Image (cartoon, rainbow, N blue to C red):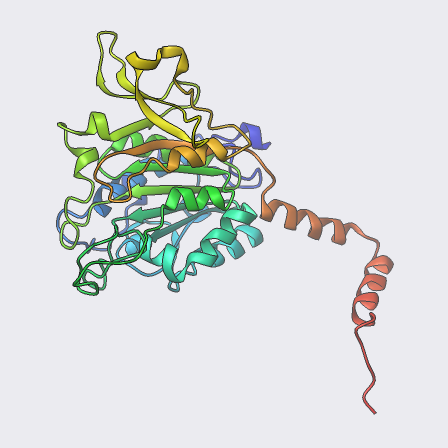
Length: 366
């Protein structure tokens, strides 16, 4: 079966599908017998249900799916899925997933991490997985707080955030996870919301279909230590002006709808800064509004759009797929090199090994 015949082209052609003659899988098939232990009202519950409901759409056997997590509240995720999984080391989930994706082309590899796990101790591992374009899907739950350790500020907490570890307010400048992923030249970068099941599932579907590293930031509410952090984009009174929806090929418009049902605000190029800015559509005309191009190989515009996310998260946030481009994946290329070496004649392989062992970097100890 070729890659294009797979239900999700991002999956490797060697992966084993569930036979069509088998009974259709459901979310229950991917739900483990473990008691879910998150605080009542945690956004992780909504994400878990969305993932459990989505996994049957992959058409894969459960043993061909693996979830790797680091440390944090979100990193309990593998316990609650009836797939293979690993609750691994703080910040190192992308590295372990890289090894799995490279050694086992028959696996669909997922990483579940949080803003603390991925962007603090795991920062280097995250950016290098993105740079290499390893075939995996990374879900970063961003609640802007350290929840597992009871409420310290995190790398995405806003400046001035008062927490147990910053009683006078944080003086750190926060990371913008989407900007970081785009800066690392991630080939698929998206943002979605825990409470929007339809949008979350659509983004997961696109991420799974992508060949390479898919990075999905999920705004996720922590009701105990950072409740209401994303109220602006969730409240019916404010979300029209706070959410900037990104849909490939469509003008980027938002805000309260006009008589035609379209948002009265939009994005245009900012001739002064070279970036983008918010305007009233009536002031500039519809033809001036920027059309979203997630497939643009140049990430400049996607990065400019990501910078519209307010540092305090109280005003507005672009939501959707920022970038979705094709480039060779690390694991595919590594396997191709191994295959080339294995195709060499036995004598040639011996010559290569001898040249490697007896190369110029050797010496004799007398």
